[in-house]
Length: 147
Image (cartoon, rainbow, N blue to C red):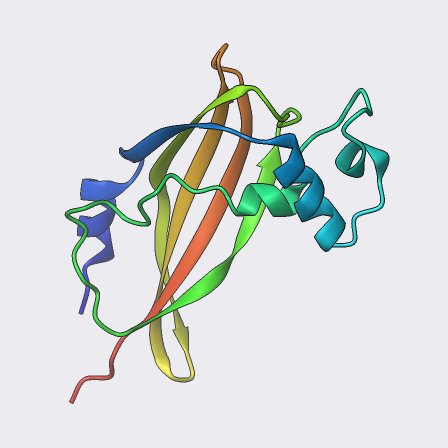
């Protein structure tokens, strides 16, 4: 059985990946159009508030999904969903810094046994170090039942 307190003490809130990024306006437009977005700030590059949709932000990652030394939990991993918290618009053409850390690790008991939830928080910053957004990605690992 995985010791969550040990994982938390070793891995929580420690940056494990980062990269630089610049978003292309054509990519923002294609993504917004494909998802059926109708608001001008998402589909009109000439709009003064043109910006990335929350759905587009979900596609941004740091490159790694877990720290390189994170142990295998065994079991069956699944995507547990995404959440975006925007603090300021994310615009095309500006240099961005993408940083990732483990934000939370917790478990729940389900009908099929224990499930471990790992929340990876990806943070976006502009070149003035303004915190633009958080993207939380949840991974769920269903533990294998004891034999």
